[in-house]
Image (cartoon, rainbow, N blue to C red):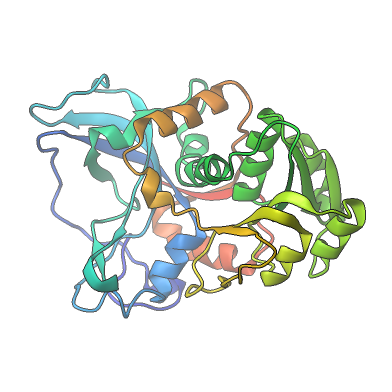
Length: 324
């Protein structure tokens, strides 16, 4: 499923591309499931079009896949064997020189070829659709917590806690002994509490004030997965940290001014591409029941436009997944 021009969901259409094959150091995944993420919609809508000038389509979105190994390239060092169920993060677009972007192909495809160190066995007991929800958001949450380096007992506030990324942050933080304060609408409180939140505050523009009301000195760190905005600095203690999960130039992203000794962090998930140890940690957390993947709905691959429309409508709890 690809696009030859940027625009709304209906620019996605089925095309035939040459079948890729694994080269040295690579494996090929027969994709059975590809999760749909907000990053896919940004690519489709042309948010990065200026930086992609000079590249020609078709462009295939998709950052998360699950499937089986069906080809191993020559001279490839890997413990994977043909038929293994696997999951991987895919980077359709990658940073290039001078702020430009390059295109490497995404996960909305029957076959995806990747370096072997980008692919890990899927968690035991999970189907392809559930496994496809883990890599990109799981690695983003893990990278964020790695950067924050919070000690057990620290206070971490997470906005967007009912979403996939927010939920993984709550689950991982709680498992690491961090005290998590999470936002939630009334209908989502039970879900967020099940994820491991120690405290829940009402979501909305005033969430920072509500967090301060409970913790007058401020919390040690905030991850703004809901893109509330710079006002989230108000919830952070002097010398604490604020993590921003979207660039200022992207829809909903923003720049936060440094103040009161607060460190503003910008977790960039491509930094964990090829980090087999961190992807294996995502698998371990899922197998241990710490990460709880949620599939909101599956669509046949040809229904990708409908999946994008549903994601844009908002209110989805869990991930939408395309099946191949």
